[in-house]
Image 1 (tube, helix red, strand yellow):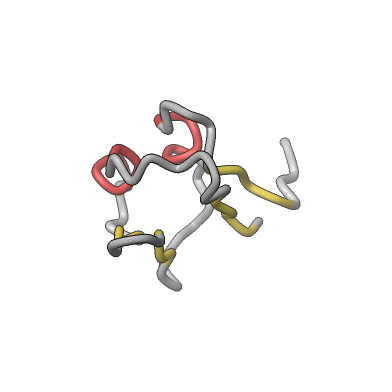
Image 2 (cartoon, helix red, strand yellow):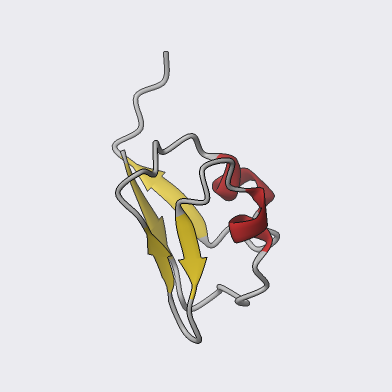
Length: 61
């Protein structure tokens, strides 16, 4: 799965960054960066207050 960000709604609040158990994302001035160690757990997606983060290609199991 690839995590995607809708920057038209992202408020750059940092809630997602603080929720990441692997420290696999960083908030730059205008963009989020997902690092290679992101395991696409979806925690950032769940804590985003505006629903700006989604996982594409998620396989529910």
